[in-house]
Length: 229
View 1 (cartoon, rainbow, N blue to C red):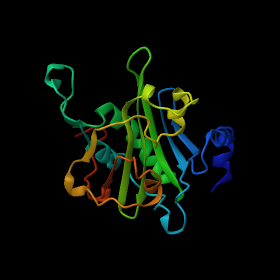
View 2: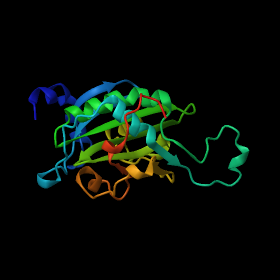
View 3: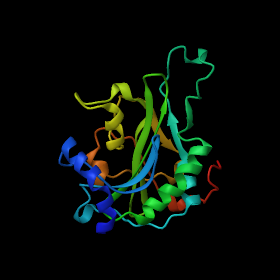
């Protein structure tokens, strides 16, 4: 791995090492970062030997937009949910048009620069109430012709997160592919004909007990303009 990609992040890596577990991922390159969102490459401790990913991969922003636009969330049925006039439909896109336009070029760039031992992670948060933030985060990687999208958190409340003694405002940024709160919503994809069987490979095996993942044959999708559905 190129040393110049890791040196600027050595301090962050040191802090991550103090935080915890020997299999923890750590950032190797930041593609974008702000107080409310980021896209970055992270080392995958499980990507070894035959379990390495098929990176780098040439994928355009338009192809990634077609993938990102196809991610669908199916919320669980709630009693009296019809009384909530502001509630989204039970089945709805995981990301709106602005989010598709924002994330697609960054994720495409990440897959084009990732090594076989890295994954691309994403994160965004918004303030829901005065004391609660909601986090959406996860990662993606390519194995052969299959693009794995792991949506570990979808609008997950941070107050339900963390390990004892760990500040959740820090922890959720350090572990974008770990679930921080119980969630019942399902992740699906449209069109269903592009879905491939999921396989226990790479980082997905590390989080197999808690991942929410779809596997897409992304080359079968027609490129779309960012944000178009």
